[in-house]
Image 1 (cartoon, rainbow, N blue to C red):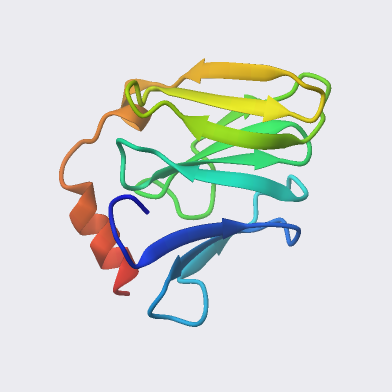
Image 2: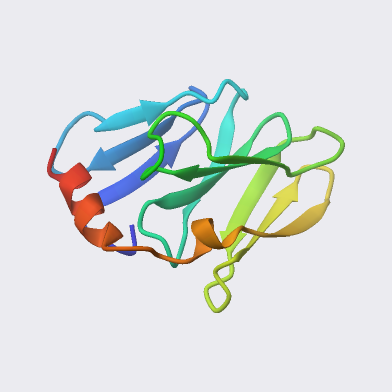
Length: 133
């Protein structure tokens, strides 16, 4: 995480998104969105508790761990051919934009709602609390 040195996310062929602390040998929590393999995950550069994940079935899932640690807050079409979303990246200068690229060669850019792109309150403290739980 760009907001906490001991926290990282992992995803893969088990189809789960895992939230880890380097101080623990098991995930602190996991989410199983039931979209097949998960290929890529990126932290939001603006919100400490937001990330985006590319799925095997062509979706871009946006999680806000402040709202739910299990369910995505937003599900977007990452590849209209339902091909896997292999790449996900936030725009660091304009964090309301997230791009994704699919196996078909499609690239889509989405503008996220302000509640997913602008920090409200002290989320860094919440992230620290999750990391130490």
